[in-house]
Length: 258
Image: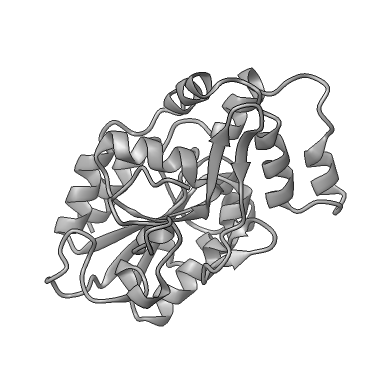
């Protein structure tokens, strides 16, 4: 897919080979190596915030908005198929996205309605100034994530499911083939991202809002676990401490105050 993020960046913020595919010769993405994305000559970060996107960095999930205004009536109950074990989460979400028949301009207006935190750029800058790198992990589609991040002027490593919009065919989401964090269930294994950072000795925080975020959230220390929505309900039921937030930029304020 064509990247709307940093020039020369593909999935996960990695360099590409000119066709949009990750260039395996370029090595691993920024937080595996020395230095943060915007500071290649600086020492590598010792702290990493792993964040969900839909409903976490944004006010609303793209799927929920699409279900309200973009999906035609009479579709099969793909979520029912998922609950019955006949489809994976990735397959169900991909089926819904492929059913979109609105034109691209209409779909992009729906993307804008997701409500990206207006203070995201300043919050990311504040975190980086305090030694935190930020990585986005999402079981949604990188297509709309890159659109919103580019519009906000924010350059982040993104581990998500690639995709492209095709008129008459919908939003075509693909599995992140070749990603070190590929998951057959959701496309992206958020917990694996967290484990990889913990294995490198980084202090890791996690922020999310949904059921697919629970495993990753359980891995981080209590004071570095940020939750809202369904994730907050899961953690509350399990008796696990977490720090609630309404806007993503509040997380930067709480981490800066530590």
